Image (tube, rainbow, N blue to C red; front, side):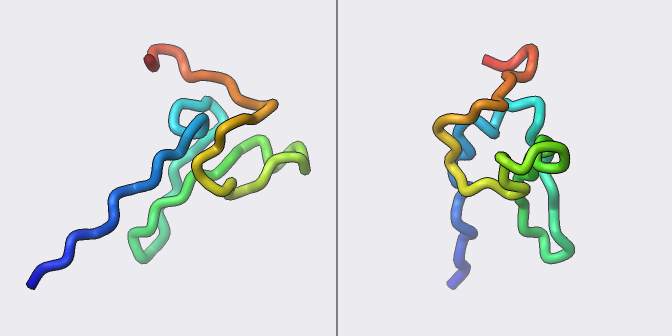
Length: 64
């Protein structure tokens, strides 16, 4: 019996934010890293998903 991996959770605002970067670990786990965390301590480096509100959110151009 083959098991399927759990689908990725909804990232909320991080899904189309210019400050979010997708990081893949050496074990193929995927994390969203907030680049604002490097200059502003209000932001978590790896925010708990889904992010529903964020003062640093800036939508990427070209996303719907």
